[in-house]
Image 1 (cartoon, rainbow, N blue to C red):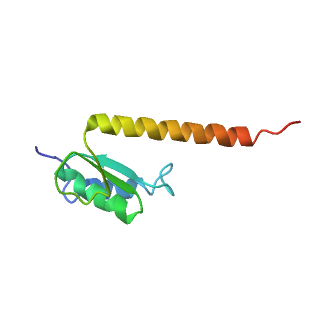
Image 2: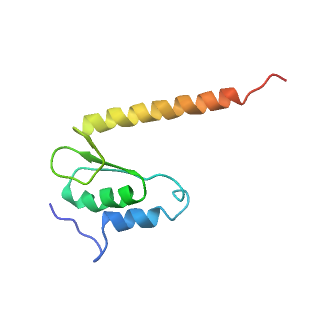
Image 3: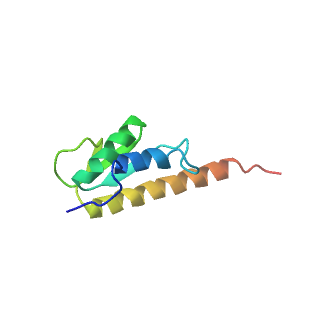
Length: 98
């Protein structure tokens, strides 16, 4: 595998820059990756209090690990479901009788 990109730039520096821009500013970063070139991204999100998620085996600085792409899809689906339920509950709680 070969990653091609600007000299001195990594996935970590890209994430740091993204997180200064709307709509990312003030949010918690989550970065999912599956190879060595993702390690800078995992380190960057850790420093920012976010979640780095390594997919597959091998050494990593990521805070979390998922077995494979199918596990990532399952995790994302569960997260979307939980967020949808929380939004529904918040909306429901804000409705009052007239």
